[in-house]
Amino acid sequence: MKNNMKTMFGKLLGAVRPKTQTVAESRLPRDKKENLFGRILESMVDKSKMIDPSDTKIKHPIHQPGPRQPFPEPKSEVDTLIEQYFGDDLDTANAVFTHESQKGKYFQNFEGYPAYGVGQVYLPAHRKNIPGKDDVEKVEWLKSPKNNIEFSRKIYDESKKRTGDGWRPWESYTTGKYKKYLKKK
Image (tube, rainbow, N blue to C red; front, side, top):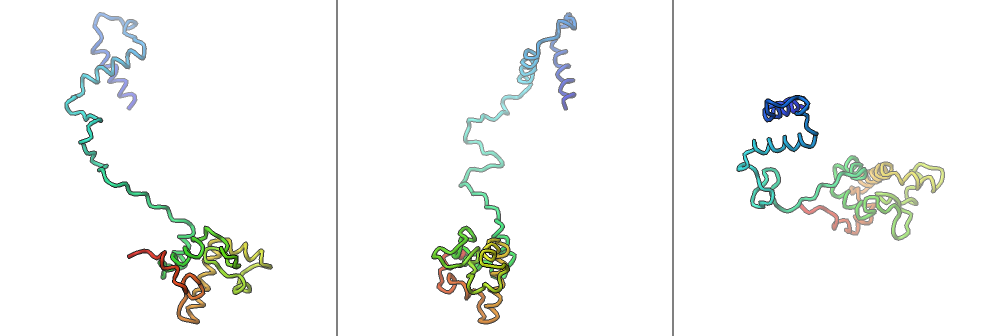
């Protein structure tokens, strides 16, 4: 492309240069050559077909004026894990975990109960099933969203087998507070 432009530029200069000039005389400084080239191109452009950028009545073919649409937020690791483990009851899972912990934004229960992570796993009730030598290690294990959501699914499955309702262990479900986070259909 550069070579073609140089050749075209050279031909244009040659066409403009008087025949009586010598090669040494035709060597113009770069800024003068560029200015000359710009004037030649301007004379070749059909100005009647140019668009006035200040004209607001012209509609761009790609962008039509209208309300701005926000970009969709990328899925977080927590959202992906919830979808992976609770895909069969995703709307309820999102609502329950949003009410319980804002999907992991708040790691420990607000009211001081020893419940931790996305699923607010209640440590005293599940201590023997959580990996770790002591409570400090168990809490560290629950900090991982993957561990917490996977363990929450185990709690859900056990409750569903026992009672027929997998969400019964979560207070936000039994009190109905999760409903304000359900997506409207």
